[in-house]
Length: 182
Image (cartoon, rainbow, N blue to C red; front, side, top):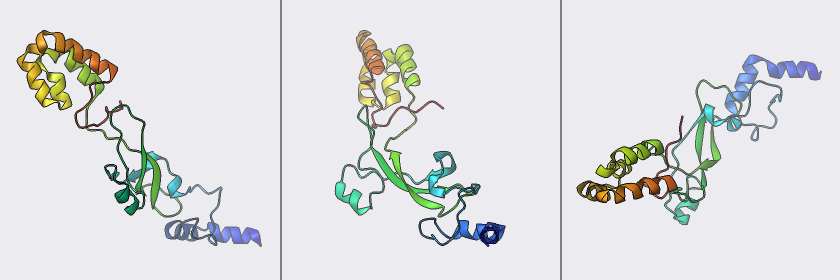
């Protein structure tokens, strides 16, 4: 009897219906086989989902609470600890999974990347630092113009900027993080 019931639940149309219509936690009466090739959509690795952009609440706790805890209370800048937020995520269209294809993913890092690579900034600083190219690249336009006009502070400012970059004290002006290497 249980064998025929199992076969009934494993038929392709019934399995497809269960996969597309309900989530495991909301449909306990529906069959979900732990040995099935389908895993719950909200358990998919980051490689197989796309998440909405994290909302920046700019340290406004009221806004953060009104959004239901979605987004980030604050974003990381510089070398402070990493904050984590949550966002709506969607399983990619070519991925087959069980349950609701749109779900909330928690534990997303609140970091921003705006295209600044550390090695590029370091090369600009070493090779063209006396012209202020490193500071132009990082968005520090005012100090870059001063560095350009004084030819790197007669070399002193140039050396100081290389040291500041290496020690992590010269970072992008917009508060974004260095791009990870891919």
